[in-house]
Length: 193
Image 1: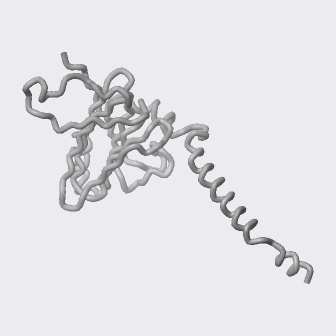
Image 2: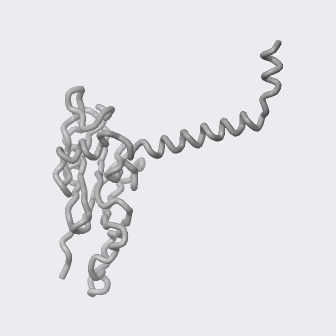
Image 3: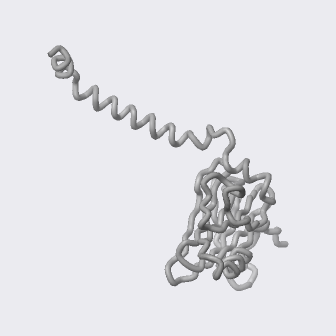
């Protein structure tokens, strides 16, 4: 009986305020987690990936995983990029559904993502430049040349990882998948004179 009387005294405002406080704490903890990680994914991959070069990783198995929980049903090509000394050109082809390209900052934040569309080939060409450094020479149009389709993508991170993911559709498609992964490039852009 005492318990019922005490529960009747609990105000609805206190319960609502408690729930709001819990929600705020949850959101803050979720947003802070990548910055508080002891060994973020970038530091794990930095030793294995050459700078500004796309590298095709071996098929994922229990003994060979670039990152924990990488899907064995996929093939990966990754590039560790850094734009401090020069812009970086990134190209990839997403021929079908299941193919994705994602860019992550060194803190693990997703800064760009693209996915393949059903029955449509998607060719991606990105010029990565650090924010605040959008001018990287005269445009082709100003020099009397044909325009280039490559538009600059500015973001706050100066370094990160580009991940190209291809579905592993079995042995029959293995050569085709490898060929498309090899076509992906990630390289520094030399300033034009």
